[in-house]
Image 1 (tube, rainbow, N blue to C red):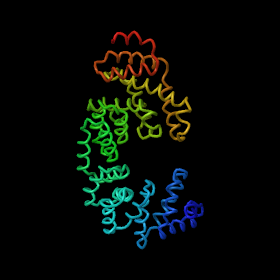
Image 2 (cartoon, one colour):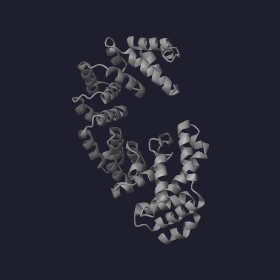
Image 3 (tube, one colour):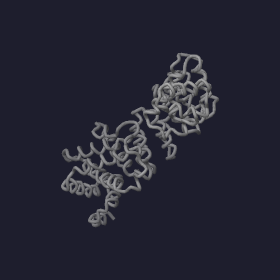
Image 4 (cartoon, rainbow, N blue to C red):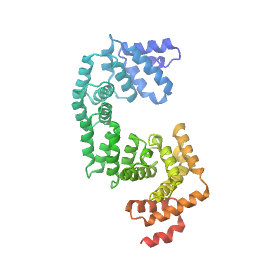
Length: 363
């Protein structure tokens, strides 16, 4: 598309005029072309395009953005939301609310993103209803908008949804709580994780709210134990269940670094657990870095993060890892069923063959 190409031009006058053309003419063809080729654009180019499009919206043409609210795209949704939110016009709020109530899924998702930036109290009730939408973009955008404005009603509703025997309903509630962004949801999500068959997914949603390492020294012993159990689950889930691209979101480096520090402090009741998670991490991240089949299509950022994690693990000498192995074997005598089971799994993963006699004693 000619105009989609021009908006990426290095000449600021050409790119600015292209942005003005797209907004003034409600050029859906160019708009959709940008969405289709987003993944091929460098971040700095996307930022320049965003700035030009937002600047092109003025008090005479801002209604044109309503006609661009089709074929939902996260990047373009932010552009529309930031463009429309520049104007203190109650008519825009009313129109966006109408889209959430009666619009298509695309229009609902775009409008929900708008209310992430605009606090309009009448939208809360409608956004809460959209948490049950069949469209994922609508649900997540509604949750993020409600979270941005600290909706206690939405929080309470989603916490209640965690209390179900259906694991996939739990997962959906956890995903929306993660989008809501309220740190008070972390412990309820982690408690729901313990006996779930999709432990890795729930752990990942909790980790997406706040860094789990922040809770490794919590005065709340239950939260402390759950947070360590969660990073264990996340490492287990990589890459088959959880995407490697999210390891920075899950703060894997920070969590492993903190566990290394804790393991070098005085012996505690959690020393065996630290050892089990660290040995699992050492095995998993070495496997990932040294097998191109896992990382060949990952970004440089993801590959670098995996390398950084391997580096901090490899800084520990053989004596340290011998101590960790001894502590892992001691975990087999732990009274906690989950810790014992995780120890058995890790022994199997790292191929600790000399633990066979110890394992036979458990039978």
